[in-house]
Image 1 (cartoon, one colour):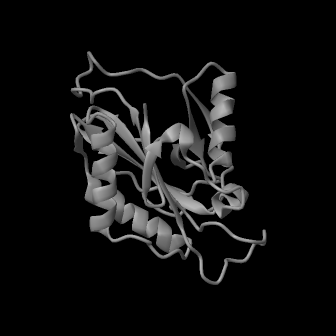
Image 2 (tube, rainbow, N blue to C red; image 1 turned 120 degrees about the vertical axis):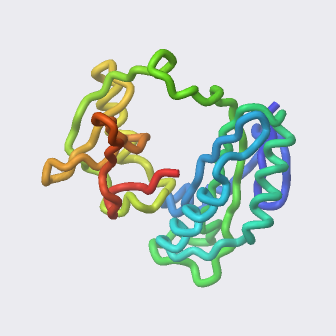
Length: 209
């Protein structure tokens, strides 16, 4: 049974309840992180927390918890879900409002939600164990602030479905200048001889961890 965290309480995921008037539901007004945990140890946590803070700054939402409080929440999620190989999903939205309107509420009370799901152990990096994916290419038609890890992922979802419709696992995205940006659900790295290449960071790309 998966145990989730929601606004101060730990409970079975199936029992977690979020208001339909939450701005994350109404507008996609929130940000998130997915943090890997292997053998019960959270990986690169500080980098994920730094990126979370950058995303919160990008949507002008104050972090409702200190780093120490968030770490305690995430470690408890890991412990309550078996401490194995897990992906930890952490989402913070602008919270519940009385009235649906585009402008931010004056005094938001953020909704903080987290849960864990099983993931595969990490690859050893060898060619023999590497996974192969079929990809397609498309013009990048997502929004112009991809450096924010927003919960509003409809553009990514639509691009991913273009891949699925062609029996592919991913889609490589190119901007109007025919420059590679990223994939629908991944950063892109290219091994060229003894070099590893990746697109330069800007508003079209989410910084990887």
